[in-house]
Image 1 (cartoon, one colour):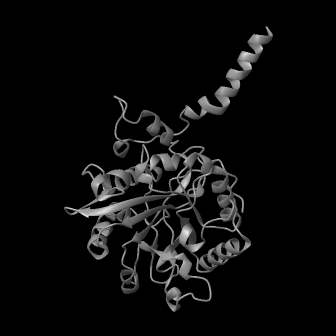
Image 2 (cartoon, one colour):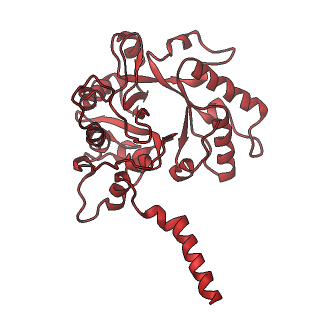
Image 3 (cartoon, rainbow, N blue to C red):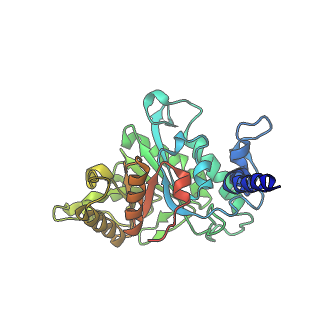
Length: 323
């Protein structure tokens, strides 16, 4: 009898800790669980019932190299991440997704992996919406005012690729799903598009009346005695993120812990970005050992970083997001 009780207790714990996670509770999880099954349809053509993002708590984590995941975009949404990243290459008048030129295929494009999926899900989330002037609801039902950041990292020539990025955003733009600047104020929307990599900044200076693609400002240039005078150009009318390589801006942690001087730099840069209304983000943060990664995450969250760049979505979603 005692043995049976022990076995049943162990099975209960196993269910609570593991199996329960596999049971779909919303449509994002159903898409993931049925991905590539014989009777599944493509996410872009699915008609979502009311529980599209039921129970998912949005958290300020950015899905680094999101297109590498088994199910781009949806894995990040299921974890509650409010930022995803797509590396784009201009090839044959299309924007293909991949980490390197050798990994590109025509079937993996900005439209097929991100734009179509976002248009489909947001269109359903916002039905009925008889007046297009009304604020559109975002992806997350718990907080429909949260905007999902789509970071577009241009890997080829920026001025050549930018018109294609703008054109391919039209399905989101025409439905009122894009955050934009109207020349005097930032108007939030369900999706905020940020350009980085080879994105040309002069585009943001020349077009001041309307903008729905924002710049990824250089975080390291916003604070410090040597900060360039050009830092005044980076504000909510031109930018949204302010990013830097952690290794370049902060340096290597000593003996598995950040020094007080390194924490001071983080604090200064994050506060400088926040003062401009921008979300600070560090990429290239250490991912191993896990203890070091968690220590750096703790410091960044405590200091108020706007977006935590992550590879491990599950660990990020289970953190206590309290600064």
